[in-house]
Image 1 (tube, rainbow, N blue to C red):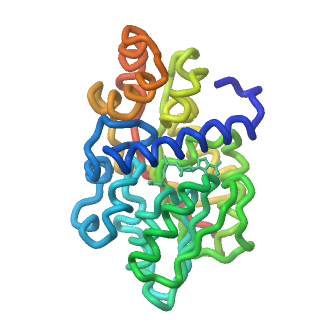
Image 2 (tube, helix red, strand yellow; image 1 turned 135 degrees about the vertical axis):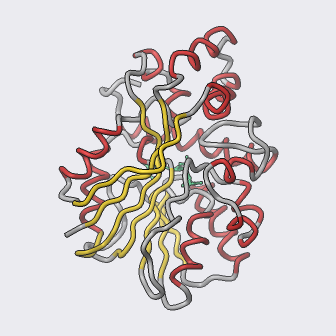
Length: 278
Ligand SMILES: C[S@@+](CC[C@H](N)C(=O)[O-])C[C@H]1O[C@@H](n2cnc3c(N)ncnc32)[C@H](O)[C@@H]1O
């Protein structure tokens, strides 16, 4: 997808893809935009969740589209406020609520109506009254300045058409001393045609920036102590799961699909980015 594309068009296309992927996950399974490749719940296990999955409503685990577990080892205490960018069907919201307890607050922001509705259903089923869903875009967060202790996000920022704006918003909403724990996909040296492919973009590949650009973006926004960990370089099979079935569903010829996956093996991985606002 070219940089000259209108950001609203990019977000509309991504939002439609995730409304479709949500529906497909309820029928079969999904991981970061793909359909029917990974059995229900398996995507979440691959992303780094294990026992946690038994503690949330089935719908939240089944419709997880993450690529990591941003809350694992995150420094968060009871009573704190956690904000999740691109909260999807709400798995990380529920896990964050378990950590901050009844005296804390958890806010999820997502632009896709279907995702907001699914997350609300899952929050209600879990019986929590301090988890709030707000519809909005991560480039202009509907969240007050300096109000968040821990900001998490799981496989979302790669989808943004304006990543510097997202990094600035992260710095704006964090309290001084607040922390960032973000899992995301990064990519290096992708062929231009993959970058320009709409389905590859929605599948979290085409819009991914390099690890170096990610770190530089967080630092440029004023965040400090930026660290990268938990790298998982996707092999061909995992890439088929992440991107293959999307391209398949869009009628991309099999040879092009295989060429596309082969072209990005070794160049795409998930990683966890941690940082702090001074
Ligand atoms: C790959 S899914 C991840 C969902 C969730 N974090 C999880 O781990 O299951 C991406 C989510 O981000 C949302 N999203 C993508 N771009 C966004 C943007 N610019 N602003 C707000 N939400 C966005 C989509 O609607 C979708 O729910």
